[in-house]
Image 1: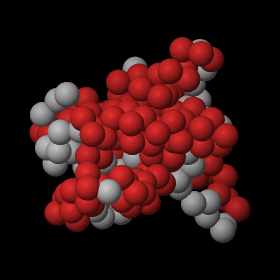
Image 2: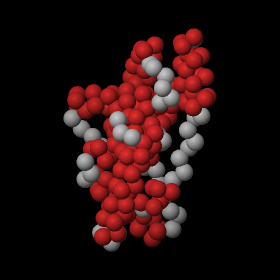
Image 3: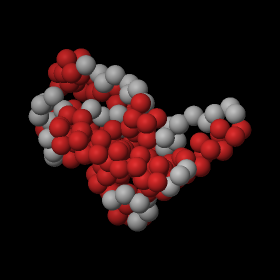
Image 4: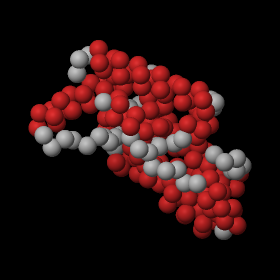
Length: 191
């Protein structure tokens, strides 16, 4: 199961040069900010859905994220980490949501593993997913956030490091150690 998560092919990140061009154009014409929205709306929504657990809540938080980003855009210092800046805003919107509601949903709500056609395989896979979800749910919030940023938001390690205020290498090592630990725990549970 953990191997499957590790083997997920993340969508290619927009090229930094392309994003830089859009940012420059949006500085000249705020209507061009819509291009940034088109690039990042889906990953931001998926990330917020994995945090908030509800479609409507994630939609609202996504809209709030982009509204805040648009308002703060003139102050954005382009340092090559637009996605990190944007996901920092999204994290803040999720935090605001929890301050109001004091509820968080587990990562299994953001289902990303397809169910097998074979019934027995499907049952086994469902049990493994359930066991992995419980293990992930028992992790400290910082470790859950690391998984969300990599596999739900699909950020690069450099972007994750920027969001979490860590070095890129630290984020990468932390995630791989966490995945190895989850794999060992899953194997120990014999699921």
